[in-house]
Image 1 (spheres, rainbow, N blue to C red):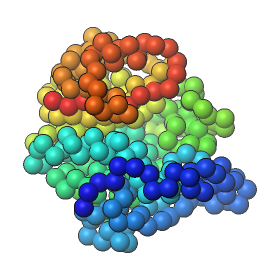
Image 2 (cartoon, helix red, strand yellow):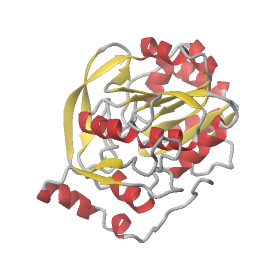
Image 3 (spheres, rainbow, N blue to C red):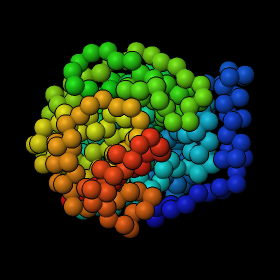
Length: 292
């Protein structure tokens, strides 16, 4: 079965009238929506034992849920890129930092049969509850309701109450957020936790989407982790963020001669190009794909 490469119905009710879902949450008290993805779509768990009963559960937000309902996939460009990289190895470990409701991991496990273990990290409790449901059809998942940081502890997580994927451990400068909140969440030492990723002795695919914390986590991880990482996807977000070792981040970028912005996957970018995105001031972030 070939991967989908477009939307089911870009003019659908769910795509154009997404705030009706937010209305369902705020005025009618609807907390979650559950649906069965159609065969052949990204969220269809075709590699699971029971793909036709493996439903998706999402929160009633006005961003992720409308798009997922309209298309039965989520950010399909990430899946297409990830599969291209994972197809180069017989077996791999998947790491998903900032996993949200588990949709990225769900799609990768559903379409890439060579992932032998998948670590999914999400500190926000309601997101994590959806993640557990969405990944329950796979037995290789290690779900953790934590964020990754420099040390173990408790951090404040800033929330976009209308977009459950627009949360940040480092800043309440959440792009496009009109209704904000905050909660305390648990974090663990990233460098210590990363040792678990190495235990299977397999190549690692690394995905991080943390709204401003990606560069910091990357520079916290020891070189031997990156020796094992064959590729990944990170977010270059232009918001207030913690200080990180720029030289170490540049060294990380230089490891991967192949780098692309995912919405322009045919154009290779350089380390200097990536730093240009990073230093251009506040604005929309970009998803960077990289591979050896």
